[in-house]
Image (cartoon, rainbow, N blue to C red; front, side, top):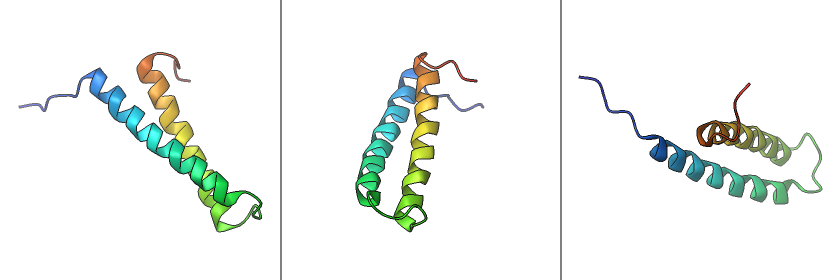
Length: 70
């Protein structure tokens, strides 16, 4: 028997929750990285979180219809 897929509303809510959590981490990492050298560990973490925020944000945009994908 196939498993039930979550509704679109649930997918949007879960993605938005993840996006909000990542945005908070992104801003916190940015404050730590401010003034540090570009090749430092905190700057690398900042860039890593930035990529993840962008990825999840694009997914949220596709789900809500404001971003059509590439």
